[in-house]
Length: 176
Image (cartoon, rainbow, N blue to C red; front, side, top):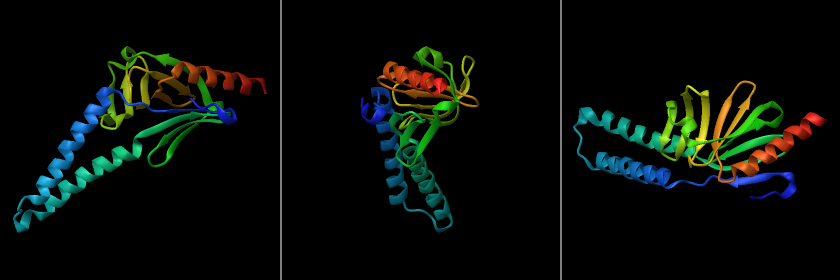
């Protein structure tokens, strides 16, 4: 964990499950793409070939776009660095932070997103948390953050240290 310049930076670590789901799914998708490209298509069906290849390519690219790389926190914000862009949560909007267990999200339903390809990413819902956005690559180390209008679940290998850091920032901001 990097604590230089009064900030914390923790890389997302992938669990064996996320690695396996990602590798198997990519093999299937890429293999299907090559099969579709190699197959001889009738003239009237070429549109279907290109549609399927576009859907496969889009699935991979969108998954890569949302794949979390690093979780950072400083005095002003918490940032989820993704391959393309980042998600920023202002610290002054945080109402609650806590550690979650995998059982806290076990009955979740994925409303939109990925259930293992490049992580558990997107919008989820369950009876305990309601609707929440999740960026998790290891369900054994979960951190819950609630703002005034959104709920987030992140995986973080050092969630207790990050939680303490965020709570310290919240107390520091309240004292101002």
